Image (cartoon, rainbow, N blue to C red):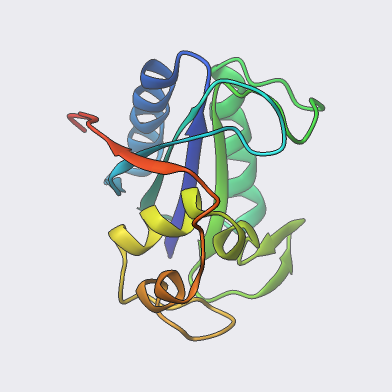
Length: 163
C-alpha cells in the first residue's frame, strides 16, 4: 500500500531526520522523500522545525504501521504524553494510507494536518503533485494552489540524505 508520512524535528534536527529516514528504510525498504523545509514552531515558542514528507510502501495494517512508527520515534527519544504543541526529537505521522478514509485502528485518515499546515501540504505537493486527497479527490498541487499559507513561514533548506 502506498503511504505518505510526515516527518518533523526541532531537536538535533538534521541528525534525527536522517536517522529517522534510515530507520524507515530499514523497516520498509525504499523511501522516497520530498524537499525538506524549515518552519517556525506552530502553537508554541520553540526552535524552528525541519519538515518533509516521505513515501513508503507497506503491507502492514494501519494499526501495526502506527505502532512501528511510534517505536522509531521512541528510539529517537520521543516521549509520549507530552503537550500537543511542543519540541520534538522526531515526529512521524501517517498522512494517507492508500485511499482509506475514516478512523482505522485508531488512526484518522487522511490526517487533517494536510489541509491545515504549509509544512505538510507543500512537501506533499512537491513529492506527489498529481496524487489526490482521498476525501476530496483534488490533487495536492491544486489544493496547495487554493490555500493561503502566507502567515505560515516556510522555506526550503538544503538537506542531503544518501538513502
